[in-house]
Image (tube, rainbow, N blue to C red; front, side):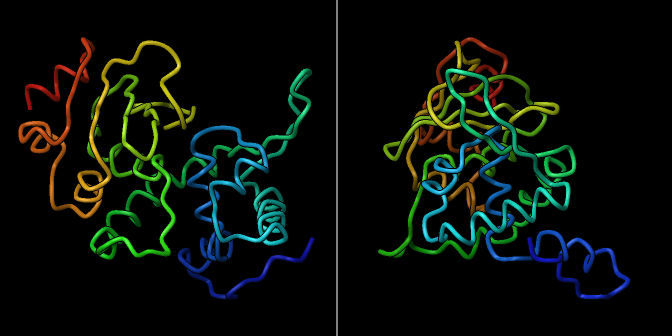
Length: 209
């Protein structure tokens, strides 16, 4: 394991970048905000990262107290990576960074990869103040959100585990507009760009927004 590189500046921003400023680190955090992930799953959802770089970043994150590695009990018997409390505390950092970078999305380029759950963070921002389980369906895939979650995962890939408080059916174009800040979730519901079903408090709040 290589020693941690440092800017050697007595500044809190510089110290933070000592930990998360390397290429791919914050995107690994984005993936681990979904909860424990296997190495193969991380590699599949981080297109473009080499196996060597991913392994190196995961070791650095473990060394720096941002994540841990543990072995699942049988029959799984695979290793998974998960964020520590310090790592989970990066959620508002990623949300702020995503909000700042939203206008940079522009039109999707032919070389741009996309995963449905990459829209989880801007949608969580739109659901701030709500609590419950929300399932989101796009043509690109299905994911679920845990707005108001405490120390657990804030989103997950695939259908909701159990009956969600709300189901949202929309498209990537609408999610992109939300990420860019061009559209609010309540406005998207009123305009028919997001279909809301469910009887939970989140569904009712969105229909009444």
